[in-house]
Image 1 (cartoon, rainbow, N blue to C red):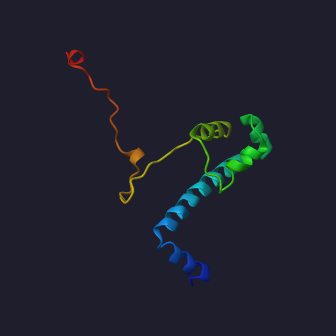
Image 2: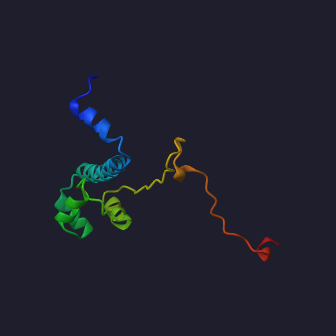
Image 3: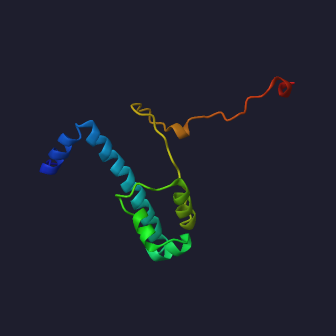
Length: 120
């Protein structure tokens, strides 16, 4: 496939690490917005309908579905997910390590440290 002028321009811009970081963050916000809108549409709800379920305004739902918006709180995302019969999943990935495994998928030990008296 032949590269367009935009493809070449973007490729050049992505060489700038600051631009690349901003571009990646914009993509993440875009993903959240598209997922909310898609789930809402699959549920057959308008933004106004979802707003009523969330006890907020249609404008707020519109903002949540905007790719430019980055103010999503975990609490708000949980409320949206519950209203749309979905779940929120946050994944932290180590920077610079391409292991194919997300940190959240690694085996974790959550055992509380036991005192000497508890061990006996």
